[in-house]
Length: 403
Image 1: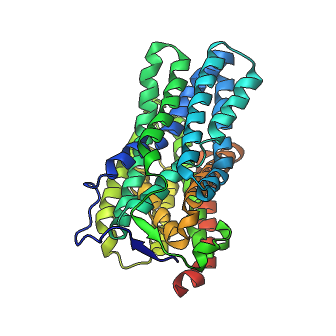
Image 2: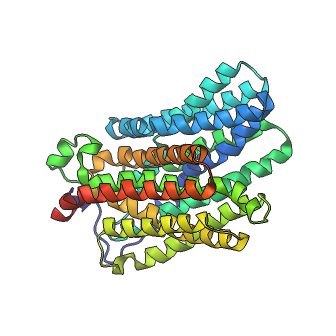
Image 3: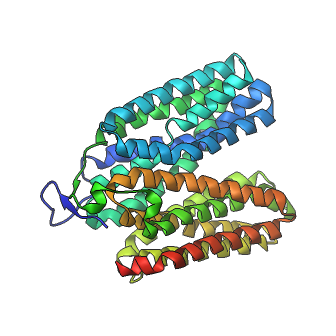
């Protein structure tokens, strides 16, 4: 899709973990990916303190929906900025101030409208930051190690979903809801400190060609469709699995309190699966879009099996199996999208993946709410997710294999 050359001499043996930028990127990415997992518990805690549990749940939905709605636009602004590093500094600094303000507004139980609007702004302003960390990775990583780098990017995301709730759970010991939201604010300083200096630089220099001088719309690249629509499908699957656990476990005689442990199991097996995939990817003779579709079938098979699980052990097994497929699938859709669009659309494209994941989560939550019975609802989630991905892959197939 686009030509690249190394701005520094090519290494005969490419390096990743020993490069000077890697740990700065890794720390910045951890801060970028941990904010959203922290938000669920932190906003429920703050909202409950202000006006009750229902308002806390409402704040979580406002934060998630607004972030998903604005992620692509935020990523586009970063891509097109004349001085992207300065823009990122403004975004992260403003996000820090907004989250501190939200903590203060909640502490003094000010107007619910003010708290709600501030929550929306807290999510909207930095919407492109998670996608930015992925586009920075593409600029710095040696092309020969790009797949391994994307594997570690997926691992960072899973680590955020493990550590975020743990951090907030620890902070609840203070009994001060504002402390939890203030901790979210600190993550933006971490992004600014570690990831900010890497923006606007990089190892890879994109050579000018027609695609780069006139990149066009993200959706005009049909070969990018699988990497985008697959984000909806995996969002549906993950939300379906996680959401039914508190209801499914009691039906099998287990305590709903095990839900959190099983979510950690899902993330843990996801990390294991990604490490295995990272080692094997270079030897898999299938095109990346074929790999991703087959992996998605593995994810959705786990969802179907979970729908028919009648014991706590069976639930735990299939949650673990799903994680083993889900995180490598996230790696595959990143690889697929990166190869399908010009570098000038990377932040926008990767941000769109996060936004579409959120859309998939919303669709799944709606289906679970509207369809009676866990089994029927999970089957509907799996069937619809497979349908939209299969149709998208079939639609883009000719153009993908023409390259």
